[in-house]
Image (cartoon, rainbow, N blue to C red):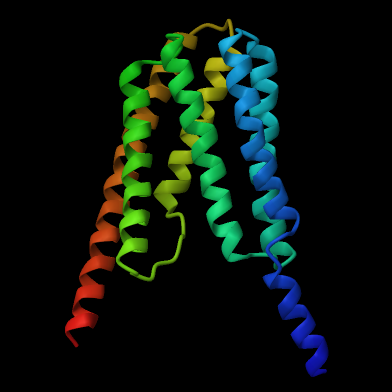
Length: 197
């Protein structure tokens, strides 16, 4: 019985598993997505983005249901998401398909999060990478905005829907950025209190 339990523990700690492979594939799709956008192949860019979004959902489901959560995966998944979304907003802003200010807000929030992770790593502050509810809502809003822009549907009220998504994405991105900043400050404060003790 002990050997069986230890084998299961070893399998769940193996960094190379299906969820991690899906995250790596999502990272590898980013250059292809960017190339298609720059060459005005918006249908192909949309296809790549949808594939990447589906892989994001799948790797989360598989990690939970197959008990294949790993430390590597906790880093790979958000990195893949941020690379894809940041690239999308930057390129779409460059080609004037989304407002530049929206891209700045999205990138600024990601830079803030990455900067916090770097500072924690340098200072040897222990922390867990766990997306908050507002963070998940932000990701959904950002993905929805990109999908709608790439689809560019010729429907009544498309202009209103597009700008509603812009403002919703901006609001959630700012809110989640401030929320993560608050969490980061609490982690730093607790770390300093522990050091004093």
